[in-house]
Length: 386
Image (cartoon, rainbow, N blue to C red; front, top):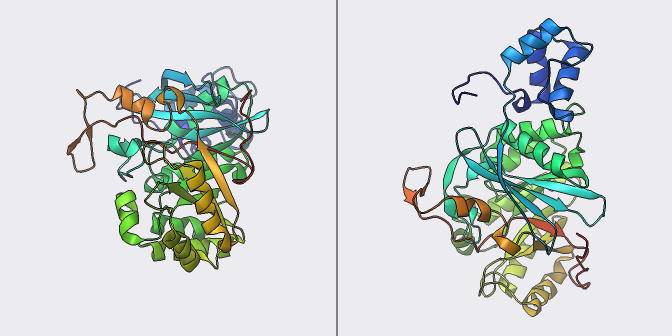
């Protein structure tokens, strides 16, 4: 497949656009739905043998659309938590990751998807940000990563989270299109409520997401209520103040009529004090919240159990559920950005959007891939068999 192939990718169009494009080449209605289901739901590249669709129509479809695949370069299983990180290569050589994550239910799993090749936000606690941004992922690349991980899954894949490499809301249109493909009956067949988009707090995109009324869940990383501190931890998201972000979350909660999930990366000695607990009450005390605490995956900034519990005690007046999430893929350095970082050697430095070279990431600061635990104060369940 030529890198300059101008044809649209059949797995890269939002479902209604795909069905319209198929109708334009002679496959309207049920014919178009059968073709789309063959390519995405059935995960097949063979359209020419599809029954009950004229052969001439199938030939036109094959000539009109691309169906090329990502190359799976490497897969790493974490023996502690059971997660599997997959590294993919696109036709242009771009490397990006997806993770198979077993859920607490023994028969279910979810797939964590990247939205960009690298990331421009440069969060101090994330290995991906140190890679710099190379480009956005196309819809078909996200969809194909999901399909390939699902094909290899030993469990039923019931969800997807856009929480891997990159900032999904800086690739908004492509990510929303991918989510639409994943939840369509002819696509991934995943419930909209089982698809989650995570953002570092791109306020205009949050407001757009709210206004458009998508069924997908939203997780917003706040991490500090102090503007200067948040800017040092998350410089790329500091264009908007914590107050502006809080206003967007308040509007989202009001529009959805449900709790807003706020992620908080816990960094010992930095953002776990009384000032932050008071700041949360000041900013979001009137908003129904669920707080996800995420331990930074780097020593010596990683908080102890006692520090985490002390922070939870400070948060208790907020009256919001506090959920602890743990990092998957710590073994073998396979959490977010780590596997790709091992392939971005010093001989091929990353470049940021301005074209400046950046040093490759140290594979020790990732905090992105997580799995929910029932309660912070309840002892952590054993992870045998997952």
